[in-house]
Length: 190
Image (tube, rainbow, N blue to C red; front, side):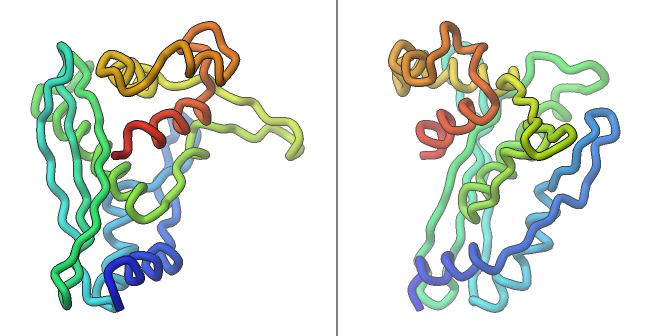
């Protein structure tokens, strides 16, 4: 079985439930560690290993953690990878510099794993159901999403005017979380 087939089987069989709860935000989520625990038996079953790598990248005037998740086939030594970025906050109350970097690393690693294993996190705290299934409140893009999209615009990877026209918004801050996730997944998950 080639690496792409193994990845397809792992993606199909992987169940990584949202076992964590954020009482402040009132939503369930999965952590990077939850994904690790769910994927370990499948890695053994399909004779693969998972390797994560972080790099610090300066984009414009900001630093980003670039996390890359590699799925490596132990039988052929072939690999497939996915990359995700997270920006370090300039400061975060109650956290020192190393904690801020660690939090950014965890965030970037989680989204690199999400992309590699086709785990959808769009409906975490991003979408809230109220009452019947027809009543839904759509939230606007998070500050992290906006900042990341702005970095893609600054790097020339996204045409801001075309994006605004496509989503029929006047400003990037009017994007919904789902729209911002779509923009990032198309341009940011290289």
